Image (tube, rainbow, N blue to C red; front, side, top):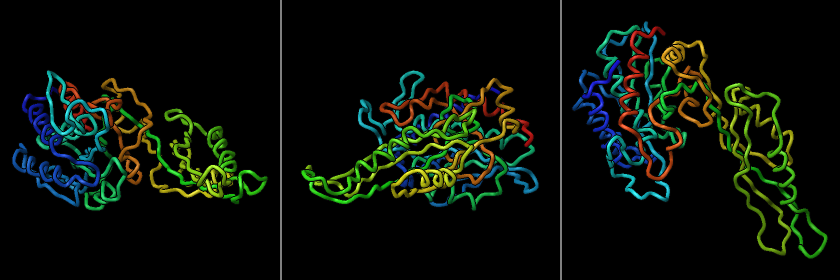
Length: 358
């Protein structure tokens, strides 16, 4: 299905609006306001706009509770601009096929493409209901994002989570758990053979985190990955440290829940271990699911993604992560997306979803 020039033109126009309106996580209010106004003024179909906090959604006309419901989600928030930008991150700059700006690739391209797809679906009879959602706080997995809005939506049967995947179907993604660890010792004078060095105790545990290999690996996501990313110990050079704190980044596969991993870790290290959260588990969708099968029939190659998305917060709803743009551009200086990628995204999504049986 070809994307009309009107589809592409409106998508690009909205993307420019979003780039020029800072929407750092937890500060998306202005961008959500402008998106709501944009939809209310320019939607080619009549659809009521709903809002909870900084999340905004629309339900396709003719909703029928007896039919399955497909959610089209993309997040409206961005990370803070990194150092190294030679262009202004909040000024949309178009150079030929390229649009520069913070959030252009992650996740503006998916948001504006899925909105146009939603409009097209609204105008053609389907055997399922459709909900478009622009969600907040995705970049920080915040409590006021998709988790907060799901109870306000119709019951969701399955979802497309728009993220820059070059329109390839990400059928699984790793989960995340961050650990705060503290090794405790006894202080003493460094010149004498006294005290218990907490730093040395921590090093033993850190070596375990570095080398431990879990029994179960995933065909799509590989091994569980554990990385010590921060460490702090000591007050001055001549005092044996009685405390050493360090942080561990855990990327889980679908073979283990975060709670399972936490139990294994606590039984193998001597440090006191506290998880900041265990709710961001790995997620996956069956290869036999109609969303996946449609994508594969169009030439898509299923893969496992190492990065987290709203999939982790859907509470087990089957979801396919897919969208225009390239994940390697996300969170980088001079972030950009191609207009041709947005056009391709609209066309492929429309072809994929038209006549879909869920």
